[in-house]
Amino acid sequence: MKYLLNSLWFIFTGFITGLINVIIGVILCMTIVFIPIGIQVLKLANVFVLPFGVNFQTNFKTHPVANVIYDIFFGWINALVFLILGSVWCVTIIGIPFGVKCYKLSIISLCPVGLTIA
Image (cartoon, rainbow, N blue to C red; front, side, top):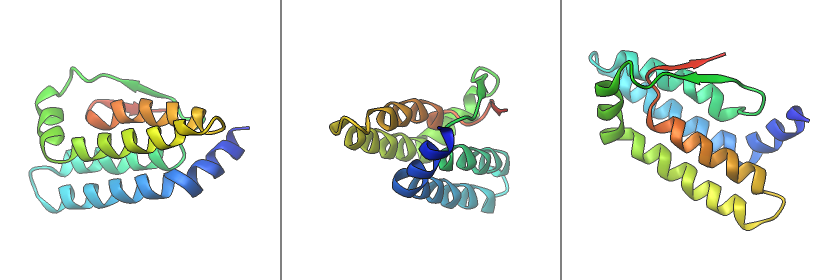
């Protein structure tokens, strides 16, 4: 079932969100100061492309300053994209599981530093 959900997610949502995060991660990695945040965003792009069946643990209290700096410049863009996509998915009855996943990923997209992907 997760293969079907991941394939539908990739076609309709995952490619867009993955591409946005790869662009943001590359921009952050071009600066010397934000390379650790950029690497976390690139790791998070893998989760955004195929999110079903992926487990992650959050520990956002380890680096609150890095998360706030990321939120000021790029985090709000990710969260806004996921909120818009989640609202579009929830309009249809069939897309409600995808919309709920978008809402969950919008919270994670605000704080990428301290996220452990298993």
